[in-house]
Image (cartoon, rainbow, N blue to C red; front, side, top):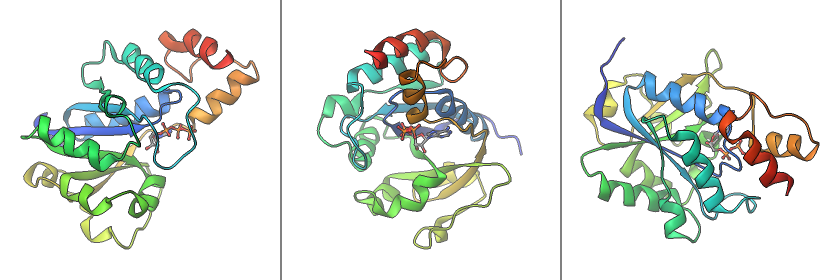
Length: 211
Ligand code: ATP
């Protein structure tokens, strides 16, 4: 079904982006197009809630994101978690976004792995009062099950515009087997990261992670 670009849906994609890679970018772009979102905001965390300290400083991770997204109007680098400091809880970020974009229906974009762990997230029930969930999955791969959430599932994209929050939709995306860990490891081993990261930041990454 073809749906027109709606100004109702605002995509929210948080991550550590240590560093950003084309796996992140291609998959959110697929979400943007499939759900006809005008904009997705990419938010590097300051202190990630569920993982070890990133290698690069938050500002550096944000600046790389900004550089890559300069000519991609639908994808926007957002530094609010860095400005806020402290542990970056998504629930706080969504509260903040809801204040700024009161008319929008927020769609929190996460990977299938994150969906399985979602009920461990800080204040996850509140998150579902503030946003829909869009779970990215590879085409042809079965949907992961999460018994506490499955009653919210829908296949109907129109419900994301019709309702303000609380729905969960799975979206097929082109999922590339790339991770930031892999990129950091390749730089450490002095292997080429060409075609795995945006070309515009390739040499920056080599300098920053080698240093
Ligand atoms: P790391 O290897 O350091 O754990 P990562 O590559 O998983 O990093 P993150 O910044 O932690 O990157 O991920 C942010 C978000 O991007 C998460 O929701 C994660 O599921 C998703 N993501 C990561 N890699 C991919 C990929 N190759 N394709 C689609 N989504 C991805």
